[in-house]
Image 1 (cartoon, rainbow, N blue to C red):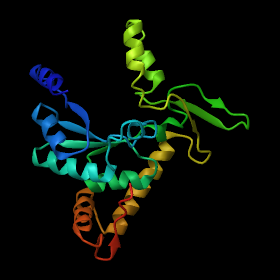
Image 2 (cartoon, one colour):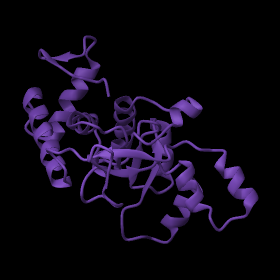
Image 3 (cartoon, helix red, strand yellow):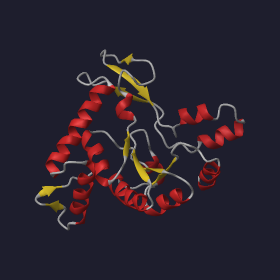
Image 4 (spheres, helix red, strand yellow):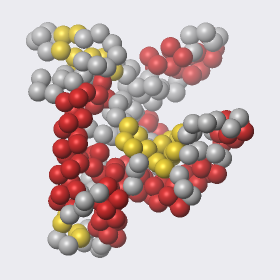
Length: 225
């Protein structure tokens, strides 16, 4: 990845370059040093990911984003929180930890706008099929033109769910509905924290993390994510 970043940066791209994924400050500094403007943070938290079960590698996402964001900010770079977002609170926590953006996959997969056919189960409930990019299904698609030996070898390293039903929420079946819900949750989180901006939310979250009791001015900071 470091060699690839250096090669891309040598071409003087006129757009920001994102790279990842890492979960600690050292990894963040290495990627930024090699030319990344944005570092993706998250190993194992995704709904379609089985890395933690298969390898034991990963880290709780709030701690990872907090650590990586601090390192990136010192270097003038940014981080994206990638994975594990299932509720509005997860977006609020990612922003509070210092993420510039939040990546959402499986949560948006169960919407009318997501790719794939809209199917129905035996009870008539609508759903979309989603799969992990390290799953057997995804690996098979990427290696279709390779030799039988290479396909078999790469097939051994399955770290993603090959097929999962993502049911459409009858109340919020579209991306716009979910974004409205997410924005509402983030605004409410700022209200509870007494923050009038995302920067202030981050500052107050830092004070809460540094407090031995995990409280700031009587306000709890939920770090279960």
